[in-house]
Length: 162
Length: 164
Image 1 (spheres, rainbow over the protein chains, first blue to last red):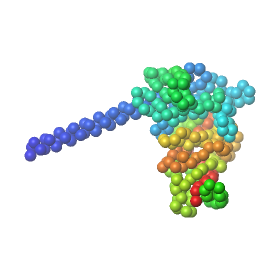
Image 2: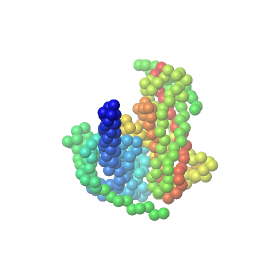
Image 3: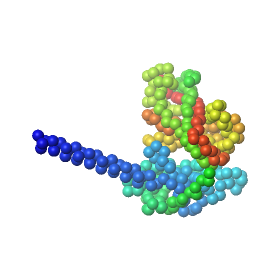
Image 4: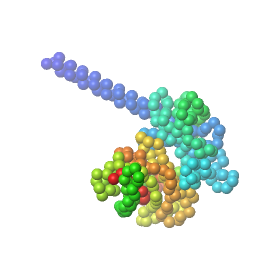
């Protein structure tokens, strides 16, 4: 009877430990996925992009432009090269140029797209985190091997004044 | 919900067009800082509320276009759109790519209601075939606003083409 009781107790402890391990692993994976969240600067320095999570996917929107106004109009830049004419008045500041990225593993996010407002083109894209402050963002059409990689650096946004 | 039925017959299969209005409440938690702030709501499509014939399901849908998008603050909130520069409306789903569907830039209205310019090209069918998706409205604030929460009403007029 005592032996049976001890066996049951050990089994419960083992199951509890296994469950806790699985749960912790899930949390760890989620923590890694969320490392992408923050403000980043592409290598050309013309913009700053804030990456955030909506639902289970990651999106990056322009929060700063080196040249915020269109020299032709003098007004804030808009998405004038969008192939959908009805959407060409969308302001570029606030525009989500990174969309639908999903975390896979090993600090890699895939299944996303990157939009180039300078030509209105959308490319398939993957993101790899080289270190906590450096991203390799690869854009391609069709085959990843035929694309181009840009290096983005993490920024610290200045705290908002109250 | 207002229903207007228009009958259209194609050469390949019979379809029908239905116009319907969806009204949603979007909210965002403050504080709100100058620049873009996002208002959201999750939508679970329910075709039984749209169609009189309850046998019509998402599988019968051929096309959904957005015809109108009107955003408004409640009159009792004493908020108008004078303090905002632009608005853009998007749909988000875990299973399909994000889609921009309407925009207003610049906002010149000083009333509590604005009408966005809708996309003529986008087809919303894939979103409405999901169990649920998120409606996301990005509002660009001229200045910081320290409200705890803000609520908006979004009315969308949709044109739905379905098989009969």
